[in-house]
Image (cartoon, rainbow, N blue to C red; front, top):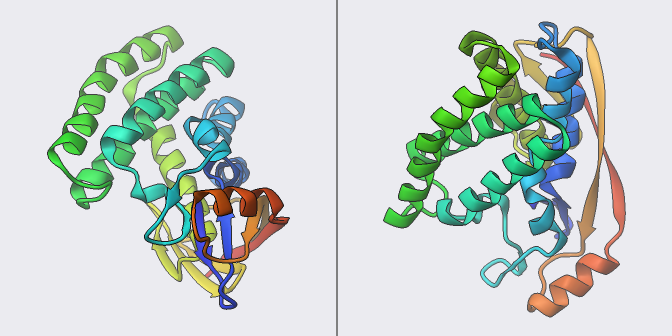
Length: 242
C-alpha cells in the first residue's frame, strides 16, 4: 500500500491498483497522447495489477504498526509478483498492456538499483538484474507480435513512468516529487501543480478510493480487523499548471 500519514495521526492507505487508476486518468489527458490511445490508457490504469493479490492481504510491518509500505519489498519479493502481473495482463488485456507493464518493471528496477532501494542485498540485486535480462527477449517477442518498433514502445513506456510518478506523489503525500519529465509541487493537501504542464486541459480533477486507517496497530490480527472496519473514502486531487 501507499501510506500517507495525516496530521491527526491517521493514515490514508491507498492500494497500488487504486493509485494506478489516477495514472490512467492522466494518460487520457496528455497533451501528447500515446499511440495507440486506448490500449496505452488501459495499460496505465492497470500497470499495478501485480499488486492485487498482495493488497487483498497486506503483510504487517511490526516496525511501523501498519501494512508494509510499497517500497519496503525487496527485489526478490517483488520480481516474481511483477512477472506474474505481466502474465495476467497479457492473458486479460492483451499485448500492449503486457508489454508496457513488462517494460515498466525494468524501469522500477533501474530506479531501485540506482537509488540503492528495495531492501538492497545480493539476493535482491540478482533478482532485479535477472528480470531486466529476461525482459529484453520477452519485449522483443511482444513487439514482433504487435508489429511496433522500439521508438514507439519507449515513448509510451516513458509516458507510463510519468503518469505513474504523478499518481504516486499525490497518494504518498509528497510535497515535491520528480515525475520523469515534470515536477509535482503540492499547494494544499489535495491540490498540486505540475511544471512543466503535460496535459491538454488547463486543469484536471483526479479521483480514486483510499482506506482511512485510524493509526498504528498492535499486531497483524489487529491490522487485518482495522482494515476491514476502516472507511473507504473518495480521494480527489486538483491539478493545474504551476
